[in-house]
Image 1 (cartoon, rainbow, N blue to C red):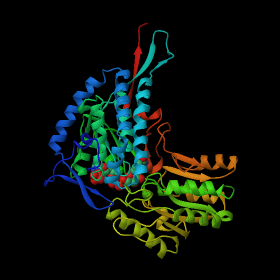
Image 2 (cartoon, rainbow, N blue to C red):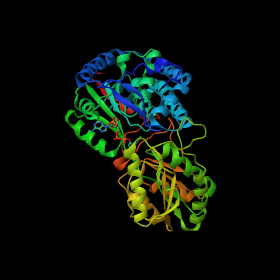
Image 3 (spheres, rainbow, N blue to C red):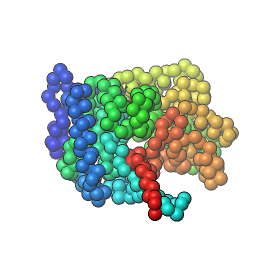
Image 4 (tube, rainbow, N blue to C red):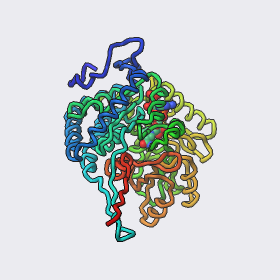
Length: 475
Ligand code: NAP
């Protein structure tokens, strides 16, 4: 932490004590900092503060709110190097990727600073001459969020920016493994002029304790969750008691398809970007590859050569492209998927071994079939299982044969095929001849058990607004 220039970004850290939460660097498995665990009774007091702050915030004009978000954006840009370093220290991703995430995370502040000014209502043609009908859109109130460790800044700003732009207050529980990025980002919001009670970050040793309050408190009007499908399912059930509005960004099992008319070099480039970013720990990561007969050998050869160039190591080191996995449980899980796939008949074309610490070799598995466990589950590691296919229709069925529906990708040189396949894939997002699809301007989200609701784009702010219909009579 000595290398952080702007020490105010570490304001939320505390000394080691029995109740503090230790933040571990996955590259070294050493403690980098401690943060306080905030008790349930304290969180309940913070909900009340958030509620009071929201009442004042919603009275500001959209332009006033926009100005704070713009300043926050600028401060994130000015502190991008420090934020990236903090992220790599607690999360492990290579520094260049951390910088990319800081830029991506900040882009939501700039985007929603503008979108907040466009939360238009409507005037609706009246059904009777004595009436006039109009709608306005109002903030839902206190919004809460629970976010994961794999994108410790972007998963927060993608929710906080539309919430604050809409006139809501915002409370967030980041993952206990990566809280430092969240507190540092919030610190910059305060420096930008955002009252502290409008953006409250909390952690507790028990995420269940925080989840209980966020899901069941009547003054929290909205819960936005990004994380696993399993936890999302549980939070939906818990939120039912207060009929809370929820949005869910959950797990994925993205197919990456290469058709026989694709440009194979482009497909390999897209596959590397999609599969190995964040060491494969991304909800939109290519999880399973389908390659058509005629180009199977060529793709496997070129892809394996490209994978061989990846450099595993501490994300702070120059040239490293694959960092560690987040913890030992993640490593055990990935190594388990590899060994089960081999037992079930897959061949190792590259890698396959665990390395010292929390590192895993980038791995390519061939001769994989649809029934193998590795195809059916969200892998969350630097492992690419490749399935061979021949027929387009059979391919679509295999690609859709999952409970998930977040991202999907395919490469083809044919425009008709591009339309037919894109329309048939049961996914919220489709990359066509493109391996990187995340951007603040497009609606991010899934179907099926990958969740509901959209983040970013013009739709992202809808999640934090209620529509009120006003009927004027007696005219
Ligand atoms: P996770 O285990 O579901 O945890 C996500 C967050 O929920 C963390 O803050 C965690 O806290 C908290 N949490 C866990 N159990 C909870 C409970 N019972 N009550 C309240 N909060 C609880 O997921 P993860 O392993 O961190 O993240 C990986 C998953 O997120 C993958 O499935 C990935 O696909 C998904 N993801 C989805 C998107 C998307 O946009 N669709 C984006 C990124 C990630 P603690 O960790 O502090 O315990």
